[in-house]
Length: 114
Length: 115
Image (cartoon, rainbow over all chains, first blue to last red):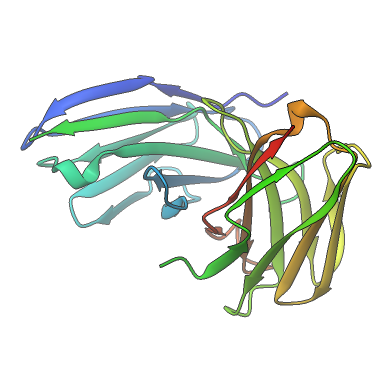
């Protein structure tokens, strides 16, 4: 069983704050790590797919880093806005199986208060 | 707006009914997926189709029957479901082979309730 752990489970921040959360995954047989943003009543939206140790990706105010040797990824949001409120899911694929199969963490629910 | 379209958005059915969920994408993706998501839990993979062939079945009960009639369409046929099958059913698609697990594009889901 592959466990993908995300922390914290939920987070409340004020508008303008910067924040970050963590995704932990098995470090052996790593293939790819995905981040998705899921707003209520909408579909999950892909943010990043990362494959290489030390990868850093950025999309606007959101960025992510990857450490495959120790099995974690951080997602950072700079200057949070109310529209950033969503559940942020990470998902992992491993090289021992199909590269189509994502195993998701339970997500971090971010609420940004105006 | 999502590029993966799912219908219907909501479905209420009895345990003896037969219904189908539909999913459509026109991005040229050759991998399509069904996920089941219960409240406060992550999406769980049910099926993967790659080039219109079933490549992954995550030991899903036979009361769920997937079908991929062509590269743009994915159906999930439902029959004799149980109340515990009530959930959000998400469809997704992605580029097939070669990509290292390229991003999946999700639909808005079908909220299914079994009476």
